[in-house]
Length: 282
Image (cartoon, rainbow, N blue to C red; front, side):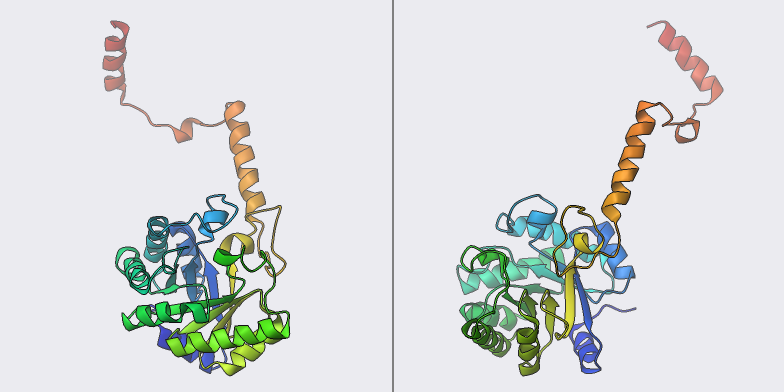
């Protein structure tokens, strides 16, 4: 299967096929995801929380994101890979936004970038797209500005807020984004926004009426036993499997059943004799 392109993704939407998108941060996971046929892989700045244990996405840096994005891009032969522009990598100026988006393309080998924000980010979007770099927009819950929008909660629950989301989406479309991620937006609001746009929308916790759906890899596979977001469905319990494996590893080391002879290597008899003779004289 060849590498998916934006025209390929548009064609899927036009024939009524929902787009699949998932976050990923490492090469082994990327290989699994790619072989499963997932359409879009997002190297999210959520890596700062999910993998690195931070309470927010803000500690993610460009250098950090490029390392993770490069690993994922190497693992995805078919999926369309998106690099997530981290906090303050595009907000300060259009030129800085273009430069950092270009770094993602050149240094990480991704197929496009994503950035948060609506009408306030139109100039950055225009600059990046004019440089020939595909941009996915991101509206609703925008984690980089969580403190300004009242935390990690559903956005667009009032008429004014829903109208603002629609206007932001239309402005991003006019600025040149090829798609928009809608995060934690009421389902009906997301559906109407999707109907008003001529570009695909991707839902993460925004109902079934979008053009496609996204989740975080660690939530989908059940990596964390203690927490799964309401909008996420756990398809496996990998966290429990990994814990059981580590418990077995610990147990076998303590009771000396690992390593066994089958896990060791031998030296030829003559070489061993010479070595033992030498060692005895030391």
